[in-house]
Image (cartoon, rainbow, N blue to C red; front, side, top):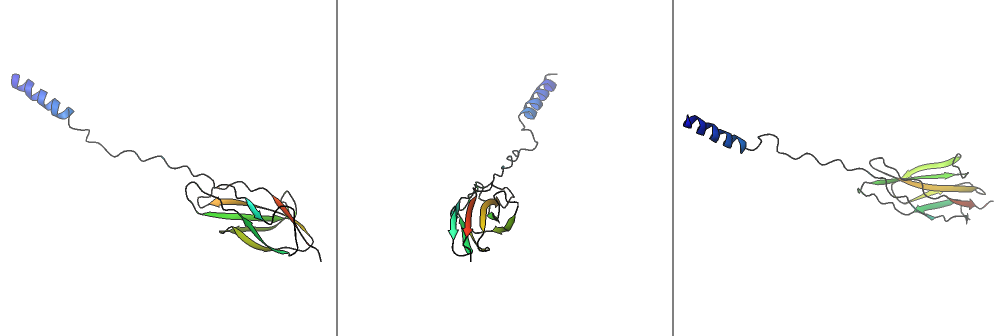
Length: 134
C-alpha cells in the first residue's frame, strides 16, 4: 500500500511540474492603428495673389505620417470658394504642381494628403488667387 501511495504521489508531482505542454507562443501584438498624415500647408501662390502669368507652380509643405507610409497629395483648384466648380483635381507624389489657368479669373486652391493605407488628412486652408486679364 505504501508503494502505491508513493507511486501516486511521485506521479502527481511529476505531472504538476511538467509545464502545460500546450501552446507556449505569446499572443500576437494588437494591430497598429493607421493614422492620417498631417494637413499640408500652402506655400505658393500665396493668398490673394495677383498672378501676371496664367501658368503657376503650386507649392505646399510636405505632410508627415506617424507610421512612415508613403504620401500622395490631392490638389484642387476651383472657381468658387465652396469647390462646386472644380477646374483641376489632381494627384501628385511631390509637393508642387504646375497648372495652367484662364486669364482674368479668380481661383481657389487647397491640398490634402493621403497615405498608402488610404488614411487622408483634412484639406488645407483655402488660398485664392487672381490671374491677370488680357
